[in-house]
Figure 1 (cartoon, one colour):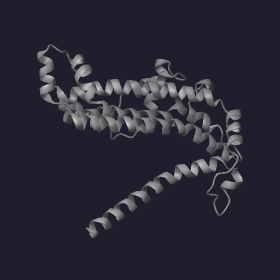
Figure 2: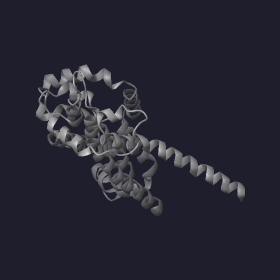
Figure 3: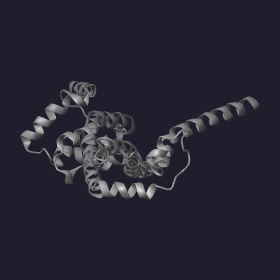
Figure 4: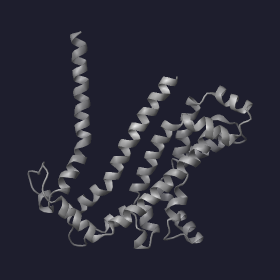
Length: 275
């Protein structure tokens, strides 16, 4: 009994230490956003909140069009996420539960594309966007990202384990088409997988910097990451202002994570009860 208690204490102590270490960078971000640039360089470091947060935020709003960049990023990230959820789930469901010619070969090719560094596709992608006349438009950010190999792989693995074959057979006997099976049978079961894939895709699109930097040419269409990069000066940088802008950009992701995590846990619990 005593040995079990000691193990529990060690386990929870380790979990608490890991939680503190993982949360410290975000705490440090908040602290530095309330300080001045000189405070950031001070030693020993200032570990408590300062009183300059609103002045730092005011300078951010004066330097860049934060609201415009915010809504641009929200539009792009939301569009990419919705398209990825739809197309990746369709493909993943088909790979998991249907047989068709070339299925194994196509899936192997799909997995192979995940091993290619994304930087290698920048030049060909830009050439294609230029040929389509999409350079400088949101189409160049949304259309190339509306399907990804990881999402198809993730949905395929989840669907293969969670969707019973008997349920699909019963749907076919009732005359359900492929899309009706997908919409009425697969989607309700795939909700936890959607929660993870949606959060993963949205965060990736929200934080994307390199591709928007290459393809966007109009300042009115800059995403948040490109707009924040304009806060860096040529000769000196007000890091307190930059960190305050970064904190403003991170807050929507924190809210999204809190919402998605609750939805994810509730869906898993509901699935466990049904099983």
